[in-house]
Amino acid sequence: MESRWLEDFLSLVDTRNFSRSAQVRYTTQPAFSRRIKSLEEWVGAQLFNRATQPITLTLSGERFRPVAEDVLRRLYQGREEARRIGDVSAKTIRFAATHSLSLNFFPSWLRSLELRSHSFNTRLDTSQFHDCIHLLQRGDCDFLISYTHPDIPMHLPYEHFTSKLVLRDTLVPVTLPDSAGQPVDQLPGTEDDPVHYLAYSESSAIGRVVDQMINTTPEPLHLRRVFVSHMAAVLKAMSSEGRGTAWLPKSHLTKEFSEGTLVPAGDERWHIPVEVRLIRSRDPLPDVSEELWALLPVEEDTDWG
Image (cartoon, rainbow, N blue to C red; front, side, top):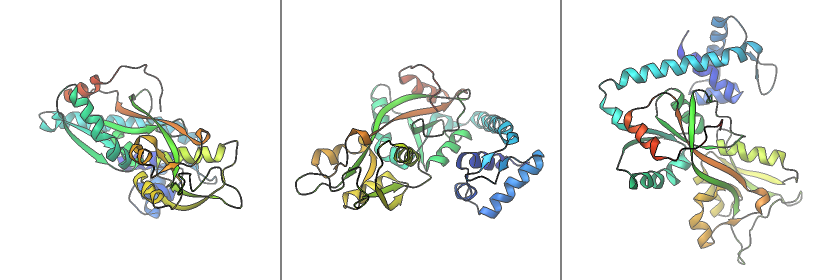
């Protein structure tokens, strides 16, 4: 049995789609399917029900999931402890974050902490949401900075991971203003004149939240998807060019709102509250990482994931 089979298994648990997980795991779908089949043969039971769309875990798969999570966590923890013995890199704090938070949140947030303490040696790995989750699960970063929301499945068990709130934010639908300063696109749109929708890709955590709101809102939204990207910065640029409406973090829109180059495409019915959290393993971190963690306010340790 190979450890990557367990990583494949947990990826498929998350995406519920062979093709999507193959992309996340940087392999072909046939190769990914063979590895899942090899794991099932090693376990001696079918772990996924392939007859449903999206696929679901079998009862055996449900029982095996916490085992796989715990084995990988212990494996990565042991590797990190071995690496830290005499390792000067233990003085560097390792972060992982999505592109959006890396560009628009991390620099100013880190500076605010350093103003209260001292400068830290840091490394920031920027990637897509699922890859950032895997970095934390594997112990390849000390902290994950991520948007959190009840509709974002983190798959980070509460008993093994904890977090602190670092920002309350809101996803706001924005569009280009007309000559009178009114939104070019106006939610909820109509069947005859749907709003041009700039969407996040399926790999985006924010995209899951927006899609869930669109699919469950009591008042139907009339949208026509005209563009897709996993990067909020790209969606903002497209919206600024008059290509449609995108749901963007309000914290990223200070300049655009003050200058009037982008305006809300609808009222607060279509706003989505989210949180930005600093997430870590409950296992001990290097001293310098624990020092940074201690700078953040203590809050009630609840199941945030």
